Image (cartoon, rainbow, N blue to C red; front, side, top):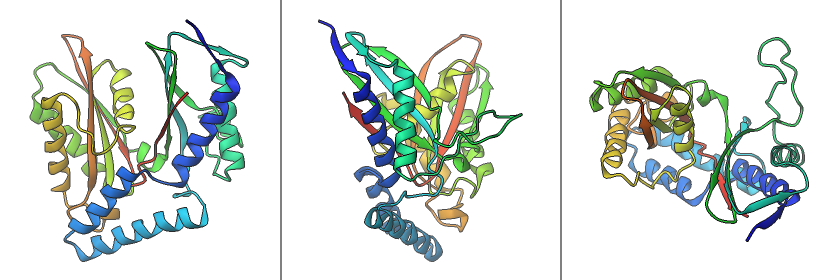
Length: 282
């Protein structure tokens, strides 16, 4: 049986998701910050973490975005193969929802029309970047990821060779975080994509940021890699906002995919301590 979903429902859901993600963090993200505050040994680091916590509370209390950079709108869409969308086409429905979210939600519009020659603001933060996959079933799962560019600009990609070791990958990821320093507003969340192709590894790294920070990779080997990376990154001592301490990263999520016998792409996508994402199922 084919299930019909009105494009208006997609628009309203997208709107709600981006407003929600920008105005408040989820319970898991709050708990990661609370744990970091409790475990931080640096007095300055503790003070910074307390300020971060206070900012989150204030944003929720007075109903304003957590951060002034309300991000570029990234949307992951899993569309069931038994779904038929009626009304507007899917992309237009999504962008309409993004437009309504950023204008009615009083959030900063940061997207420019042309990246090089005509950097004129589009005024409503559209168009969104949409990653779509077709999955079994008759539902649509939407995950909104508003991505600020203070952290986005710190992303890296390396086309490693097949003989590269786990230690080589760890060194590359840790060095990427070290070079980023305080720029991405640590403590950060680190997404790592391993495998695929030149373009797919960064997608995996971005997708990793949409995963719960306390949910490990289902593959034990990659779960162990996440743990090792988190430990190594926190040994850098960059600390909250770059003032030093043991809390440089709150979580490291790794996603992987099969790749060509001649390659081993590895990408790193960093998120600031505002680990914004929200999911809904239609």
